[in-house]
Length: 398
Image 1 (cartoon, rainbow, N blue to C red):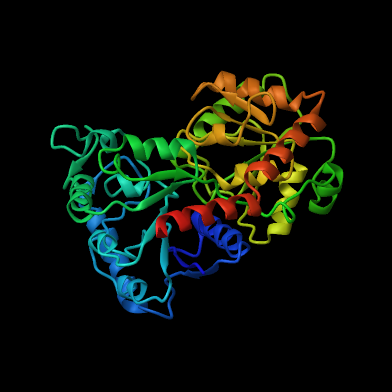
Image 2 (cartoon, helix red, strand yellow; image 1 turned 90 degrees about the vertical axis):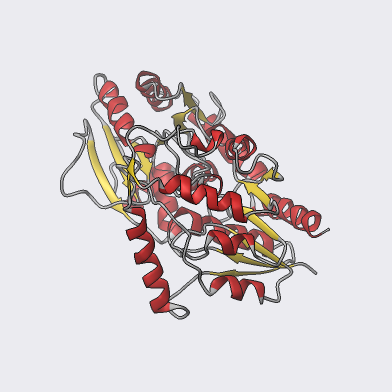
């Protein structure tokens, strides 16, 4: 019997949600599956000091990339706990917050599978790369002009190159992420397979739009555009500025549109002036209530410049909600153009606005909703994804 231990460094955010769903999907196949998340119970003060030291270390580098950077230099007791675990297989997920050092990852003694929820594994210290050094290697002569100070990214990448002697089995949630792994200077020879993040299609399912709006107290006569984020509304790679441009173009012809923002409270000051009224829904931990927002919306918009396989997209599909996004990253794995949504040309806000108009004006919205639901059942159900992970586990253990 296979027994697997999932290790994820945070109990919050999109990766944590995906890990919980993967764990449930795997356990449903009969595999003994457990999840280990660093908490205050273990390693409380030392863990806090490591995180503080990691943040201070990151400040030695000046960069316009505001996304989290993880030096992963300071050793932690979690490597020993993983090595002493009775589990036959360790399944790594998001390993930021100085939960494991680069050296410790390379010294794990159990067979390891690693699902990549961001780009950190094959990059430097950054969890999302805004340049292409990860393709070429982090060299002295290819550093972005906007960076200064200590070249933390090159230093961390060099440590990965030095300590990661034995390739691990990589799982990429999207075809795009798998391509990145295969094209990276660090992991180009590592085994990689694509398995999407699953969703419980029994919990996440369509309901009548009017009923959902009544339960949320939302108006029936307005067209509602949903945008989801985990407190990263104004992060460059999430493309909120591009969404604003598209909404401004849409505003020339629309009067009854409202923007719903999930995952963030209303900011005290807006970096961007929104052309439509916006309702910031904050963080919603109740999945039943979160589902209501998808069912109440006319569409979900994902304006990201860089994205892997966003949970919001998978959740929207399961609820039968069409999606409008750019044709980038892992979005084509979710959005079938003209069938489950609209794929706009990358970063073209005119085309993104056209996509919004196309979906809002749908004559056959029921057909698009049915196609979205069918795709969720066929590709992202717990049963489908669990069976694919079971096959990878068996193969890697052999």
